[in-house]
Image (cartoon, rainbow, N blue to C red):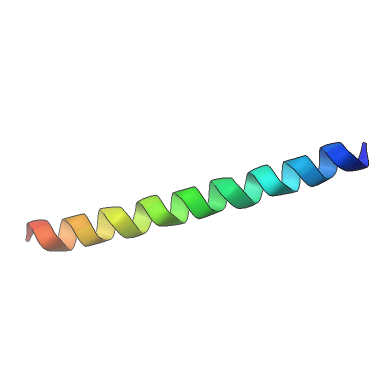
Amino acid sequence: MRANYVTLRLTLRVLTMVLTGAALIAMVAYSGAR
């Protein structure tokens, strides 16, 4: 159960990082397009 919890936390952290990175890339691309 504890290992599962740790894995879930790690997955959420990676997912947040990916979403943040995608948002930053989208913002830069949008600014560059203009």
